[in-house]
Length: 131
Length: 131
Image (cartoon, rainbow over all chains, first blue to last red; front, side, top):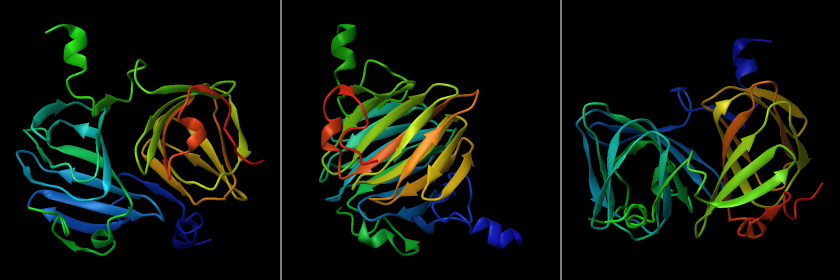
């Protein structure tokens, strides 16, 4: 079996650190993601460079985020919360949110339901996000 | 501000390792979970003890799993795949699946959409899963 054939044996298995997988999007300068769309839910593995701020925005889709590595400040509604690895958060549809990093940068697993249509293709930007 | 008041300030923030959070369920002997229901998607932080096997079952809800800690074998359809931390997998609705651990045990983040109704309350069992 070739390496490629082996790799394709289980198309339902992925790895958070495998940059060959997922649909690549640049959300904004310093924030890159890889998108994994499902039927009802979409995963997004987001890498945020140090000292980066993601625009505050909102969208109708429900979102959860899990801080996998590094540190960040999650902006949501009128709050700003410092997050450590293992912290996770819930953002109902329509709630304004953003993120910023310090010197450590961050890797975040975002979960969207329903899937965000505009994230199903490679490209740039937060999609049809408001604001 | 009391510690309790501080803790309640941001009800949208959680931690994967905080056993005081979530709805506790025992899925089967050796497998405990804490459930975090959203509107369209439900998170489940599952701890699987060493040398434990979860029953092969299926349900209509789409599921994703992320291996956070330890090691496991994911059973899905007619395949068995060894998983390391950072590996994640997609299980469309209706596909049979199960899990087993060796000496390391495992912590898995499961993601369900739509939310599994039977997991919105504390209790025991895989719910209405078919077998």
